[in-house]
Image (tube, rainbow, N blue to C red; front, side):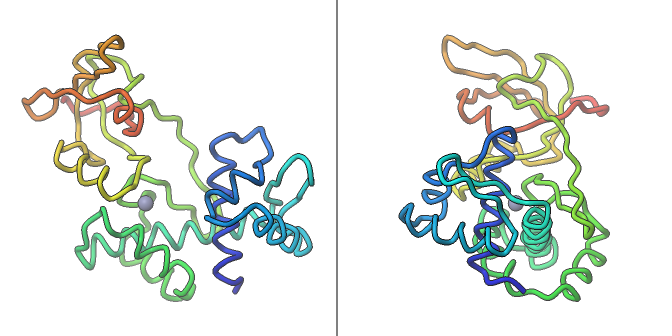
Length: 223
Ligand SMILES: [Zn+2]
């Protein structure tokens, strides 16, 4: 098994690549996310390149190789299945499980992981709506609108919350906007940076930046 530092670098690289798939990841960005100085990130990346897990261009940046991506997806599978296990089976709050999973993702065996997957019924998303890669390293790639740009007046289902800071998740829960909830965007007022959302008979207003972080998909159930 790779060291937990190696696994963390691969996972963060994967997440950064998702944000802009057509570009190499800049070393400064990676270093900032890992909480290290650029020199530390560069020497780690050179080690990863020697192991064939990334390709590195000294002036351009870094990208996962196919082998590096498979490892990264396996770490994400562990992370997201553990999060769901902690919520569904151990009844922990969804705002605290990310931090716990950061530790556990490096230590659980494949045997325990596949048992968790089985007990949970082979789920496709974690408590925040993030897709769980399959054991073969496949991850469904769905395009989702956010509350800031989804069509007004249509029934929508909350699919994913992309800001997973505990305070934001607690706010989302207080608003009743957790994944699975059906709602409609009642109106949008760009000049006021405001989005009005109706769910369960109540209407309330969110700021545009919060609305950007809540992703939705069309729903067949009425709001
Ligand atoms: Zn998650």
